[in-house]
Amino acid sequence: MNEDAIIIHTDGGSRGNPGPAACAFVITHRDKEITRQSKYLGERTNNFAEYQGVILALQYILENRDNWAKGKKIFFLLDSELIVRQINGVYKVKDEKLKTLHGQVKDLVAKIHDNVFFRNVPREKNKYADMLVNEELDKNLTV
Image (cartoon, rainbow, N blue to C red; front, side, top):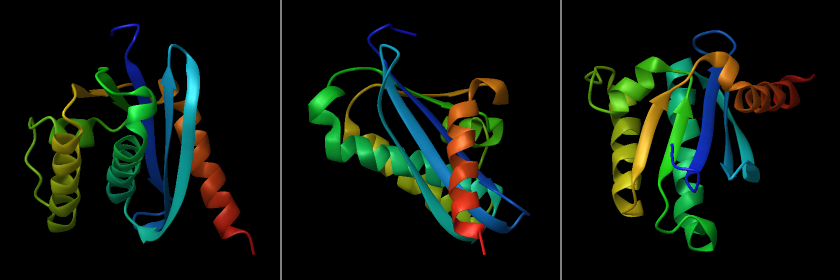
């Protein structure tokens, strides 16, 4: 990856499938954190949450990219091989709910007009985003 690239780790998870779900992303540039966000999603599947993490990050980029991302390569790193392969067109999206989310991802990427790439990474290389997902779930599931 290019040293001047924007790196975005995204993750989503559910406790149960479906179950309480959350998503998160962390954006870095030159090893410095730009921002991080997480969101509670309610009762959803794991794959729904994974897509929502990507969508949340893409929406953030569109709203804020003039500040730091304009013209740079943007690498999304996910630990979900399925979602990466669906976004990259290797696998077809069969689930109707996921087709809608897949379409949202494609529409948002088209609006960015920059080089956006999606890559699969092992879970151990996505620990920070995973931690944010679990923190969001813990915060919303305390009684």
